[in-house]
Length: 111
Image (cartoon, rainbow, N blue to C red):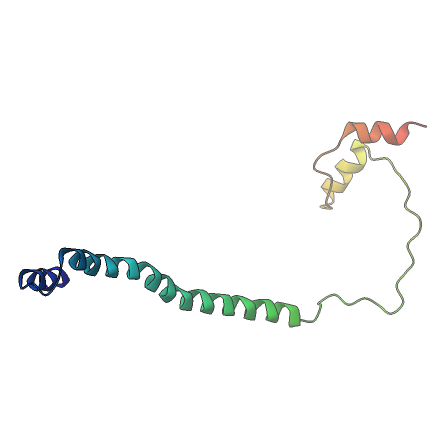
């Protein structure tokens, strides 16, 4: 429709060929920014809902509360871990190491 109207005006001498080319190129140059602006609403709403979720997360009270008198921890000590200990822990259903690095056992026994 735009092309037909422009051609009609060109044929009647009310529009030059350059004017017709400009008239045809202008809408294509405007569609991109207009589409980009129409997407801003979606971006704003999704950002707003994400901010609401973050606020809800930060407003939650912790589920694990520290006691007023925590037990003091002693100094950490190195230890040994052998296959019998791992086997008995696995049989009892306790968590065990999945990867055992033999270098760590050697380093623990070196003076």
